[in-house]
Image (tube, rainbow, N blue to C red; front, side, top):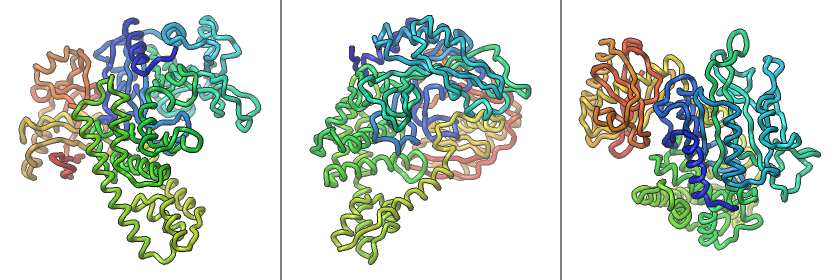
Length: 592
């Protein structure tokens, strides 16, 4: 049976609910208080404090479907399985059940709930690490065999290990980690490509196998004496909704599932090109980038030349260029139609896009495409001034104005010249290498820093938030925060622009509360009770019916997962060293 994405969502959510799990609302695509990544890249990102020991207000058994974005996959988009935006179906055990229950439940979901043929399912396990005296995961091996997986469908690899830092040898002391067990679906109609080896196996890159779920078992902690078993062991599961849909279709192309077909159809209409042959790569890039852009926009991202805004701008302009390459026309307003007729139609049975969201998406794409048209005009002006259009100049146009190589090449040919494309490629590769080296931590999709200094800054943002209310008024709304070990950054909305005097008063109040040595405590209470108490919340985030609220004695109350200092005296003196306007009624504070 082939499920639609709506049916698969319903099956998944009901399955874990019926197995006594509580749903955790998905967090925004722009994570709070996580300086190591620009975007939410996994379902467990919000659960790091709880996997490390904090008490979760919803209990020990959790599940959700989390929208995710991974910017490092942009250059990979174009094949049949890579996307920048995807949805991660997850479930977690915080010191409750472990391997037997997790593997049995997931197997039952695949075989009984969505009816995947078991002969096409393969599993991989941790093969052990002799250097660190870590045994192979024989327990999971025996569980899988009892569930009915044949030994020929079980493979062991050294890489089946998870920790925030990577392999066992890369982990610092104090970090938790453990083996993982992945499940793969085999597309038997896809022939094995021998350029990847004479034999095929789940980790082969030929395209015959697709990973559809991974159960991580956090059972060890690294110490100065080696790895020790954790007293409380956690389960962290993640499975890609799009990939499971591909398995249900028995087709490795995720763009042929119903979660992409309306978008592909919309692109076919505007380009007058079918999803076939060499056209497929172009349509996949356009489809992914417009969908991902739409989700970024409803999460508050606007095109810019920095951080999340830069990624959004890059995707929209890349989609425009690919549309040109496919159709030969620069009808940039057509991308609005892809969002309207494709993305919105795909998700009309979910609650992702409200009417206001749709208006925001269409207007933002339209405005950015108008800007891009002007950039193209500037690029044309530069070309007219240039006597020699070579590969290096072609890259300058591409980098400065988003000018597509194909247009530059076409103009050069019309002028009787031929550009060395290899020089363009060499310049492009140098740029990519530089970008990767300067932003490797920002774009890798890491997890929140839990150092002592960032915990102090995190608690300080609570004081800052309340102080802004005290000084400026009740219309203040938190728009986001970013914390590193060097400084905190706090973004907020305000109808009236704060003056320098206002900001200095905010700083004075924060330091006054620090000097008062106020106790910091948390309570798990019903959401409605927290609202009645006046606890502040991040407006973009949805909260469960039971929440954790942090109280700074007699001063601040805020929805938050932690961690925090025990007393404000631990924070130290806070100095606001920069205040700036970043948008319409949007302001940013930097402090250290």
